[in-house]
Length: 338
Image (cartoon, rainbow, N blue to C red; front, side):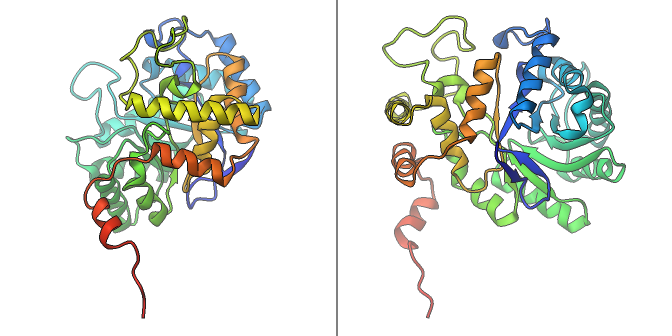
């Protein structure tokens, strides 16, 4: 396993982050099935034995069960790993049971600490932008948690570029602890973040921690057009996954399969390794419901695509350009200095 710095911080995280949304207990989200504590313990131990030191969860995953199971699974290994969790979505009925007010942020952190059975959270993240709570109020709560020693680093997830830059400016203006990471959706089927968010993260020194790098399993190669989809998997039917251009997706999957055969690796490993070659990436969040899936994802860190293979996949998956990006391509390709 390889390790990378989380943005401009000194925190080292494994290239593969074990996302434990699949830790559901017997009351988990129906689309994820169920996973008991013994299985969670086993997968967590295997991940750590394979070099994974980074685990991602959120307070609302199975209504707190994911955090609870992760805390139990880590046990004495807590001090050797980095825990990332998030807050912001609904946790109990009523107007204050969701959102990112200062009250809710501090309350949510204390609840997560209890479930995770830990004294501190390594990376505490805003789960998504809140269009009601003032951003300054939200971030003041996060900064207070750092000052109290309950949180080590601050991150955000699911922000637009202007929202993220506004958050960075607020922290800087008030002399608060910096945001060190962004957790966005990013995969070969959706490279939109390269237009605005990636340049912003590179400029401001934020580490990028993609979620959904296999696009809900589509990039494992199991789901192909004109072929019967496998039974007993997370996706039950077409149209259930996140939207993407299926014609473009088929071309990408065909190339992934070709590279996988040539390299004697799996399609999903090629898709993950591709993202590991992109600038700004600190770690990839991958889930697993069994040991085979976990080992397969972890092994994406143990080899590297060639520059030629990356360029082929770049061309097949290039995102469409919106203004002003197409304008820059035409009129500002190169600026000469005299």
